[in-house]
Amino acid sequence: MTIFHYDKTFEGLLTAVFDAYNRKTFPDRLLAIDEPNPLFVAEMFIVVTDEDKSKRVWKGLEKKLAHNTCNMITYAWLSELQGSDELIFRYIQKTFDNKQSIETNFADDDVLQLKKLAQKVNHERHRLIELVRFQKAADDIFFAPVSPDHNSLPLTLDHFTDRFADQKWVIYDTRRNYGFYYDLKTVTEMTLDNTDLFPKGKLDENLMAEDEKLYQELWKGYFKAMTIKERINLKLQRQHLPKRYWKYLTEKQ
View 1 (cartoon, rainbow, N blue to C red):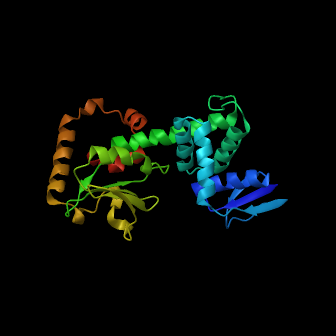
View 2 (view 1 turned 30 degrees about the vertical axis):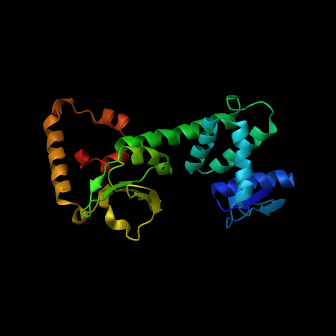
């Protein structure tokens, strides 16, 4: 068994592809740098992430694959699911080893699984776009906490910078403890030292603007007034709107 250890970054994965072809040795497993080796390891190699190598591999993929397929590879990486890096590695290897395109060869399980994985991440991207709820802070910055299953927040930034271009905002992934701040010109990645700012999926009331509290109460009142109790169907609600998103919705508090 051949093992490659790498730093678990996307650039590191692409570097591993480059090194594998350069060494003419392909890994059976991809492990983190500090992850222990399994039994019966015949060969071990430590991948040192190299930007030039990763760029060469990516440019090679762009020549062989359609733009949407390259996006699928990125989406599959952002899934963060165990084994997704090995799936991507095999997909890239098959792309380079075949003269004909493998993009629509869904008889190949790796091609099919990569597509399904990318679809899951894309589906969650749409969920975030639909369900992110901003809350106005006292300093006039709009905050929106999220905790998606996949690392899909970066895929939504183009939408939010276009849709809310006239206001400063922060969208923060509380599960991964990072987010993005938009200052009316650029989007900057950020982290917060205090992760208690978003209790129960909402901005701390002590930090809210006064009119934000009023608007939330008005929205709750409108939602309650428009609800027909006899037609409430929680099972159908959960089917169309998974319960894990409810904590971000003012009307569900």
